[in-house]
Length: 224
Length: 359
Ligand SMILES: Nc1ncnc2c1ncn2[C@@H]1O[C@H](COP(=O)(O)OP(=O)(O)O)[C@@H](O)[C@H]1O
Ligand SMILES: [Mg+2]
Image (cartoon, rainbow over all chains, first blue to last red; front, side, top):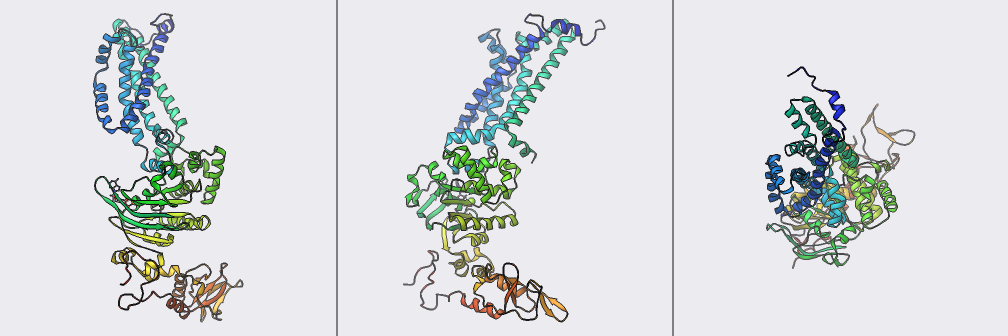
């Protein structure tokens, strides 16, 4: 191999927005969509599912078991399973990743509701809250910090897992790895890693910011 | 008025927490449920606002069976304070206090105005209104809990060991504050505690419960101290009942005589000490207008010559009382003679059901 620099900036400049589907910017956009949709869908499903698990306790054990088994499967296995159903589309990545997000978010919702201190719940009852209002006005808001912590884990792991989809051609920035390995050309690999890390850090930072804004009341409680 | 009529609570696991409880909680007064841990105090309290439903018997509030009232509606008319305050951590203090007014559909402005009044009423700096609960001390949180319970001006207040988790000094000030509030508000208060001193200090009536949820005795604090119904109550009351009982007798009636010349005072008439040669010896003071006979006796015991110095609210000498004067009053308030040997009628003050009129 010749003495090449690790990063060839001219390659990045040429490929950032070359108009084609393999442009770095297009891959980045793809990556963002495929990473965030599962978290979004996951949250939408995890909220009612988590509530149901709290309401009917017997539901939690089997739900948690299914989630854990799913989580233990290598993502590639899930992708292959869905490949036969949804073909070479984004859905083949988004659907399995939604399951991964669920595996984190359902326990987060359940733990979040369990984190509501007993005296808080009891004084809500004693003040005369009816169940639905109590849930919406007291229990869910108090559960927010724990749910947000789960959301951070789900988001960051979703951002990293999307790359595995590159093996079926739907990996967003992960496609840069395949490209780089195949050509023994490191620039795309470095670019891919850098952008994924950047994306993860940025998303996590935004969620921390959201947490600060949404729950100003919980900051010092953790310090205490 | 709240009445318990043959109320029993048996939990699904078979524990009988309250057993055939009959009692009346008078309107406008503080009734304390006191007893050792696990004797069914919390269960009894929560059956009033239906956080727990009785297994049998009935509880009435203002003459209505509580089971006829929709629980949330019932609860919005009953203030409730618990040990850990149970403030909503995600709401500012002002909104915590305004909780029930919001539930009752008051406008935000009206509810918050009311909340601010209450913060002042319970002795909190209005500047705390915009804080979150975690930014307050335990004692402050407890005051907020009381303010929240009072927000919609409910006629009835239930308090479950509200001051047990704070340190003794803060607890004493919260107790004094409650008595001051009550002298203005005249709520019907049911107060639960395991601390007999707190019960005796706060209660107009004290109901002593024993484990298994049975009523051992119900009486005014002074009666309870002088005439405990049985060994259980006597033991629970602890030591020094005789002395403690003096707290319930006003020192107003102590006969004062003019201060003798050996009591040195400053220009304003405040005592400096008893003259003994060149020295000034120790003295004790009491204010007959606001203090109890216990304070008067204490003042006498603290004086080198056994003579208590009576002062007014500004600390100026009004007179003195020797042991003879204190003794006179002690004799007047001596406990009634023991009813057992003589065929005299039983004490007229209501005691517990354990006492029966002789046949
Ligand atoms: N939900 C419950 N299920 C079973 N037993 C209970 C329950 N709540 C309380 N108990 C029992 O009932 C008794 C009275 O409890 P409680 O009213 O909390 O007493 P206290 O407030 O006087 O300490 C105790 O023996 C307690 O263990
Ligand atoms: Mg209790």
